[in-house]
Length: 220
Image (cartoon, rainbow, N blue to C red; front, side, top):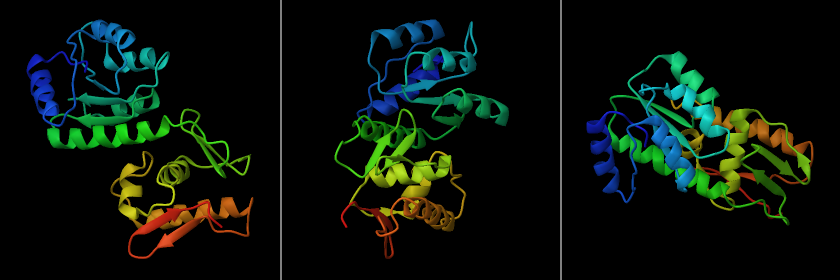
């Protein structure tokens, strides 16, 4: 965590420890950048208003050599700051003040996603997911997907052969607003199916699960 407010840093550190999330905090931004080169962290919580350098300038410095997930935690709630942070590589943006319980949820969601993405593409599979390049190959053909379509299909692939609820798809997607209608998921699924059918129109790989959501299977 790079956070210059000692009190906030202590509160978050103690709270996260209750959930088995160990935190190493740095009050000075350049010290935080140094720690990132010395340790293998799972995630970074980054404040924006820091001494010496703005947090928005830190994000591209980190992205130049690391893909570590970044959650921006800042009292600056201007939409411009949020847009710039996300464009420069932040994974999430939480305006202060917020309930620490929400931070725990977001951390676990991001870590679950990144832990799944660490698995390399499996050779003998119809769907090959490359999370670093953010692309999906189906039957050796690169799919042309929108950001939302990529999110949904990648989540289904990571939960292959298991039912995933529409709510989960909505919540875990990075490019679909949390306030969007669940019906939007059905629309996006339909578009993905159409793109898959252009490559293989004999099999439906995304199955509806009544009362729940959808399931991706490679079984014919």
